[in-house]
Length: 151
Length: 150
Image (cartoon, rainbow over the protein chains, first blue to last red):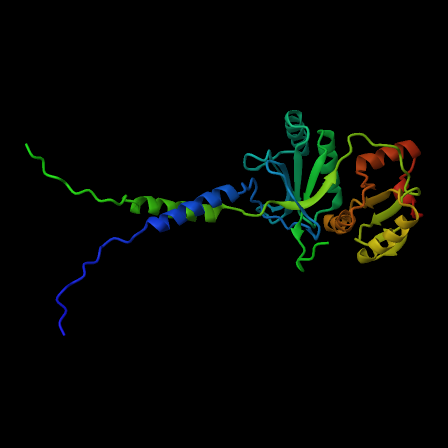
């Protein structure tokens, strides 16, 4: 048998539906996006009971660092929650920055992102500084316990 | 004069737009963090309230070696809540003091604080070094260190 009639196929793909889905995905991602003001790698302490940090919370980072000679030390970083974190020279700079932020927003939350292995006195010193700066609400950043249990 | 009719396609040319949209998705997927930062809430008091000595409160101490003392008795972390429950059952308004040795690892403090926060212990105080210093100036000794006879 010989077919006489040839069907002509269009050379373009019907992409309208795909474009809709793509745009919807884009909107979803834009709305669900959380800006991360700090990308320092820190071995956080683990905890089972955790609550979400507030959007726009300021951040104080206490991370381990190793210099060119292999000597370990600690470095402080600070972010106002809107801009990326930057290293601070001394703990007094944290006090200054905290006071400045609290003057504008007295109920602002401060996140403490610190290594779980550091001596508690460093955290204690940090908490005292934040208190002096007028900070009242702190969130001690913690990683989820490995077994996933939350009480 | 008769103008020739040019056939116009009824479809919008969206191929380029689709390309841009896909690139946007890839960008967002690479840079987005879906889960917000999570941790343990901690309240800092503006001014110290009424002085509460460790002998008046349920006294939990995290020592430098991460060991835990509950009212001066060595305790495992998982035993804290049952003991605390039994104590607070007798005296519901009794405050709880969590005193952490400065040399203890931060994780040790978080482990105990996590338990107390998850149990909803309201009247909880974690004295900082400045508060300890003030009490030393006031009493002439560290009441948190001397509580258990050290």
